[in-house]
Structures are given as C-alpha cells and as structure tokens.
Amino acid sequence: MDSKNILAIINDLGINNISFKIVSVLFAIFYYFYALVIAKQVKIMDKALQDKYNRLILLITSLQVTVSLILLLILILTIFLV
Amino acid sequence: MENNNKNNSVFYSYCLNPQIKFDTHEEGEKIYLLLRSHPFTQIGWILSSIFFFILLFVLNLFLQSFLNLGQVLIINIFFIVFILSYIWFNVLNWYFNVGIVTSKRVIDIDFYAVLYKEITVAQLGKIEDITVKSGGYFESLFDYGSIFIQTAGTEANVEFIDVPHPSDATQIINKLLSKKYG
Image (cartoon, rainbow over all chains, first blue to last red):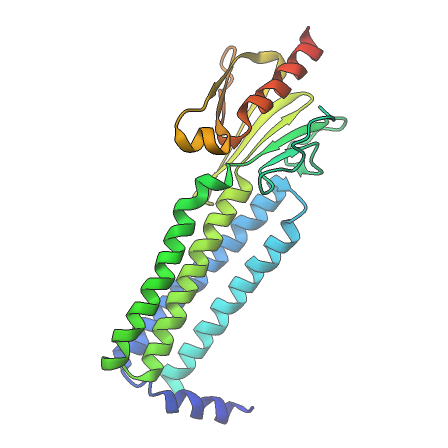
C-alpha cells in the first residue's frame, strides 16, 4: 500500500473539520510526550528493581511510544495532506 | 523460611526468596521476601477501566448520529489509547511499588504516580517495633493488611501497605531479627 492509497483512505473517512484535526493533533502531541515520560520513568524503575518481568514491561512501554508516534504522524498527515 | 508454602503466591505479590536485584543491592545480601500490594486492592482501577470501555460503547451509539466516520474513528482510537494508558499506568504503579526484606535490612521502594521515587531503608539492627494492621471484611477474607516497621533514632519508618499474608511476613522479619540479634 503506497502513500497515495493511505491518503485516499484517510480522505474517504471524511476527517475534514479543521478544528477537529487541530484538537486531535494536540492530543496526539500530548500523548506522545506522556509516553516518552513514562518510558523514561520505566527505565529508572527498571534500574531500581530488576525482576523477571522487566523485559516484558520495557517491551510494552516501547510499544506505547511507537503507537503514540504513529498516531501523531497519521494525524499530522491528515492536517497537511488531506 | 524455605519451608513456607506461600512461595510466589497471590499473583506475584508475595514472593519468598525471589530472584531479583535492586538499586543498592550489596554483595552477599540475601533477599528473603518481596511484597507488593494485594491484587484485590487494585480492584478500583480495574473496575474503572471496565466502566470506561462500557462508556466508549455507549458513546459510540450517539456519536455516529452527529459525527462522520473518520471523526468517530479518531475519537475511538483516542479513547482506547487513554484506557490502555490508564491500565498500564496502574500496572506499573503496582509492579514497582515493593517492599523487600533482606538478610541485612528492610527496604520500601515507592514510585508515587510513577514519577516520584522514594526508597526507605531500615537496617535490621535499628528495628524497634513491628505493627501489623489488618481489619475489615475484605482484609480478613483475602488475608492482607499493612505492616508498620518502627526504627530507632532518625531513620525513617518503613511501611508495607496492603500486602498479602502480613502475619507471615512479620514472622519472617522477626525470625531474621532473632537470628541476627538474638
């Protein structure tokens, strides 16, 4: 699936209200920074207590940061390109 | 202590001889007990999360009538992300707030709202008094309560709040004290 197809799908969904888009992007930015702060804290907590599930916890935290970044990028894409 | 039949019981909140390491772990220091809050005390945020999912479902019934598909989709994504983050935040809060009993000291590691770290340490030799508080219907039913460890001098007191089997944990600390200091 190329970028044109992704844009077409986003366009078809009809996310066309500019104020809605701006609020969504602001939320996504906020969520991205929140995920980064949590990731940093988890690293500190991982250092403070090394238990057998720490790897899983670090993995889920990285996943949270990735999801927040993808969400932010998709929403920015809808603002500038759709 | 090796004969205790409660090894790693109550969803990993009462672990005897756990294989863990912590910040200030000294060489030759044996870890006897790791305590977390009893899972039942986490019921508040678990129920809240279920409520949020139900709320999202109900919200979807109304949103579709005055928002388009894309907007409903984005609201849903944000709502789900919010609920999952809320769950994850509480899991982290539970997992990393621990009490540790070692051969040399008693340690309370607390992360308030994940962001603030507080580590309280009491050397076994400085422990003066141990109080167990367990009262109420659910505390009796699920066998959990709080342990307050009072220390001598200026050392901070250590508290293990809502931990499983508080009497057994106190017994372990008392055994260590009598083993070390008669």
